Length: 456
Image 1 (cartoon, rainbow, N blue to C red):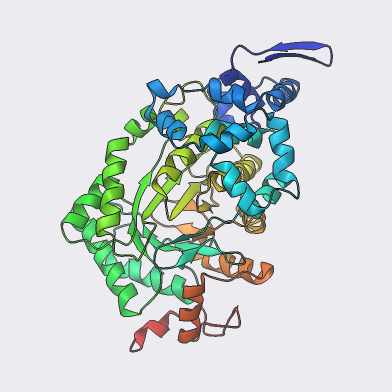
Image 2: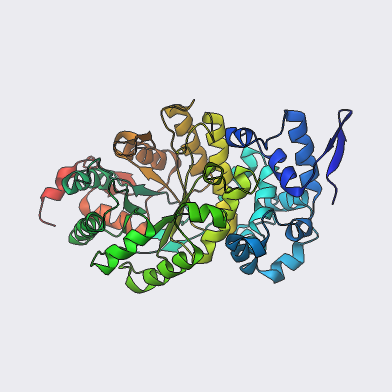
């Protein structure tokens, strides 16, 4: 395994495959703050060139975090399709990139190939791909999942409606829901982030949203994004949830920082199959985002992209309905500006798709970052072209509870119109019945929340 190279009359030597991964990563403020980034662009190019020459077998035999020391690694290696891996193990990372971008690599071919790749192999090929590479490759792959609606079909762009409220007021939550639904947002999920981690509050939000969706026969699913243990207690107390949620990390230590273990995720997955009220067969929702492991010092010396890819390796173990990278939420300590957010969003989407999961993105930023709404609109267009399963839908793109900026109901309607995309097929039929959509286009009634003042 070659870890040294001379480039422009400069000699570069990397002490481990872990260091090579980090130095090959595109510039990210999180890696720089952790002291593991390339010192300059020449060192970064040298690392990318060496990484392109490694074989997949090299990566398999040199795990960044050994399975015997980490439960996430153990799941990633245990879930690997060894027959598929055996066919490609002698490919270099560069050869893997060339194949992914070739005409031979259709969507079904890539879906099968991804099952024979570990998360570190997927991260490695991501690091040597340009943004256009990431868009083209991801656009080929369709990972379809179903709960009450079907997510990920070609020609469709789903929206997770996020009607958060700063005091968990049910009336306020329902008001935002009505507006979003009338614009065509919410076909992927209606998901609320509660302010208070209280089982009664969670139960009330679950049941009020569930009752509303059933009253109006809306083919989507509800979810309350509290800690998974609190959601489980709420369900045991009579809360009705279509989908269960949890944030993930790419290492066992990172999961522990979230108050989560593999055993707890296993228990939640079993509860979802038995107690979730959607049709299924997919009942789990996970969120991720580059930098979370660095923030809890659980990255094992690895870079943000590598640890993020490992989140997807863990997520696919539970066959989720959706996975969402909240790409610009953590802050400038990990993604400093619009360029870094854009790159991370495209990386995460590609890596999730190649893992075989139903992948979406919260195209977002916090107000203390060097980013603006134009950056986010650019990324939303790029991801929509790349075939993202869903984006977020917030009133005016502004979350009044979490205090960050994302995509609005209007943004998503515009993206669909611009690119000829539609909501999930079940939801589109409901919109047509309500007079909100005709022939794939919004009608003049769209955005009129007073439609819900009628008799359902």
